[in-house]
Image (cartoon, rainbow, N blue to C red; front, side):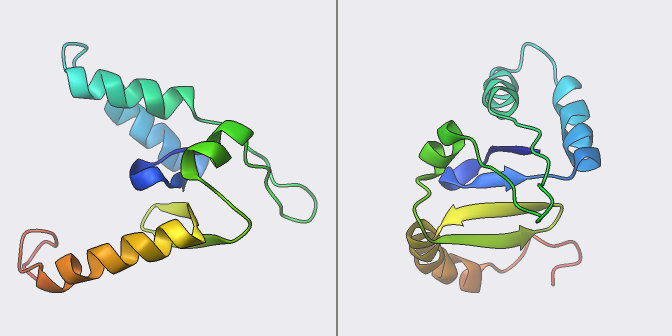
Length: 113
C-alpha cells in the first residue's frame, strides 16, 4: 500500500502492516480531532499497487505531486515501511535533521541508548 507520509514523502507498507495501522486508527475515538484528520488523509490517499512482472510499481499522479517527485528519487527503509522521497527534498530534510539527530539524548529508544 502506498499513501501520503509526513514531511511530504510517501509511505509504502506491506499489507499486514497497513492493516495493523488501520486497526490502530479505527480504535481511536471519533471525538479525537487529530485522529480523524490523520485517518482521512491516510486512507483517502492510499493505493494498493501491485508490482508488474519486472517488480515496478506505478505511483499515482496525485501522490507524485504531493511528494514533489521529480526524476531522481530516494527510497529508504524506515522500520516497518519504506519511504519514497524526491532526492532534493530528502537531502534538504537530512541536512536539517542531522543536527537534531546528533543531539538527541534520550526518550526515543527504550533503554536510553
